[in-house]
Image (cartoon, helix red, strand yellow):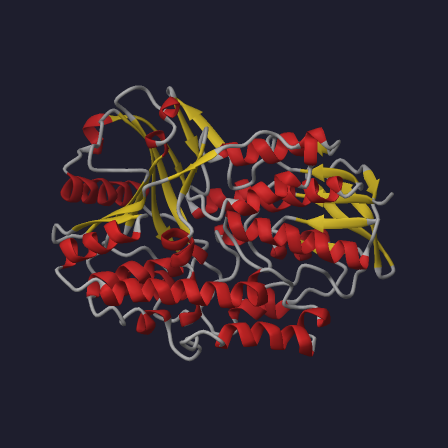
Length: 491
């Protein structure tokens, strides 16, 4: 029976531990922090509970499938589908609700934007077609294994991609593709999906048009108990399977002998032998700190990073009737915001503001009549605030102007995370939330592979490697890694 050492208890690391243990392997998981969850940890403050990291739950089948690998050892997990994905607010007073029901959504597009909803609904249909045509090729398998590109398999995927009635957009930017519905506000709305992997819609490839299907086609969901319930379910399942957790135990080195891993050494100097090592840590510190004697993939490590964020966690004593679970307050000039992020390396004077109120679906997370507000603005990776108070005032003024809520008058507690905080708490290089950005047509191929070809027994999961960041892709990464382990390092 083989032994697996997993580094990092984020979603990718936890899911990999569950899958490996369910397969019959002895699994030990090492986490530098005092708790599991990685970016998806939680905070309790002043009678409020906050999810610190990802706030959007889509494609729940991937989590259900992961838990089902454990059979009778699976921890309970439940969730519900929402009737809407997001509330949108524009500076000119336009408001739009992205309803889950297609007929209701179509009527809302006509009402809010005074246009024929047909082109926008067709745009979403193209998103669904593109997702289904490419998921098997680009998301659900490794891009870096010869077996992924056998003539028969490649032909099958390409045939599926082009057997639809319309070809995939391969040669233009996402922004240009999103001009198709013919309305500036809809274009801005669809451009936002580039931020789901921390990218610039004015440079990112149009193939990212598949992302909206996760919300509009497959649906938006809410875990019972909040987002941290995802972590709890994976953690408890791993414990039930016998995974040994070493918390407050940072790994100092991945130990190798020749071209094969042999275990890990922790910061305390203790060594643990392992047949397989899976790094769920960011790929940059994995090579720089844990594998300093091995050649690093410099081209990948030097890739343009995705965005980070400044996040305000506010306990707000206000019912906020116009706000739902997910809310967007748009910037006046969206292109200027991305020029600031990726060219000037700063936060725009008028940034888009995202507000998540988890207590909308988990009322126990805030006192009655109050909300646990997760308020985020995009920031460049590595951004250092010169005056956080100014940004805070800008955000509060924008909320007051666009929703009528004076947060200052109703604020009960506060916690703030900057890119530097995210980097130090999670090990993410420069606080980038999604590893490298997808601002080039070849970006998907420049993500680090899930299996190291030079060091046998070394694997990678998490947001900085293939297939990318966010809960669904990290769960897919765990599945891919398990499949590679079964093939290259069987029990």
